[in-house]
Image 1 (cartoon, rainbow, N blue to C red):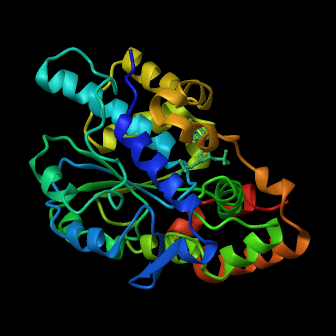
Image 2 (image 1 turned 180 degrees about the horizontal axis):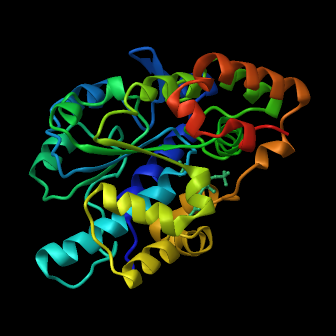
Image 3 (image 1 turned 90 degrees about the vertical axis):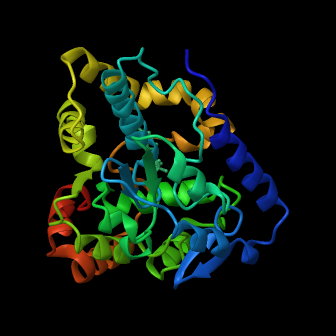
Length: 313
Ligand code: A3P
């Protein structure tokens, strides 16, 4: 039976309560030119993060907010549970253990990284950070990173709905207001196009594998197989099916109060592709098409996103 992932729910509930007492203008702070929510991140924690000793067997998931990081995070946690079962010949714990730390690297307290340095392998680490803001040891020690990207129109759509129910983030009266903020670099964790452009520099790195939300949605069995192979985790057919089933939108949504507490209600929204068509005006489509083309369109990551398929009306 799955136990509640207490740390996750506790940290989020605390941040939401704190943010409810704050003014909109106080919610974000800037660190090295990127905005972050004050109730979740701090400059002290960013500085402490540099002491993390990354390992070559770490399982790192990098993804901009709303790219499906909780989904792929579930897949990675279950894959590591399969690996542990084999490596240590113990009964599968498939996420049964309570998480010791909040899974997102940049969220926690200043003592988190020293504790992580003592925790056993393999560690599963999620992050919304851009590559240049990760601890230096991540690349130096050749930790493997799964880079998850999603088409920018659905990211913006998902981020808009999320911002309006997630008190640590500034909310928006209208979609038009949000769109302007998204396009003018006012988002927590920074501008998505800059995020893509920075990560694009690492797409040829042998320790970085890129996967898109859309390809995983289209063929989860193949996606999970490829992810497992990248991290050197072998799977029986039954284990593969199990990981795929547990990570389906329906089963994650059903389990969400156990896995994510009250946050689960706002996280698992639609879980599909092309919801942007319900929000974008013709003018907004043109603006985003242009920005995409200018910032990332012809790059390897831009091509991987299949913009013509997923972002054209
Ligand atoms: P929508 O708002 O479009 O529904 P993140 O976890 O990075 O915050 O991303 C959240 C987005 O991923 C939400 O998108 C959410 O519904 C979607 N999502 C969560 N679990 C999913 C799953 N198992 N399959 C597909 N999409 C999922």
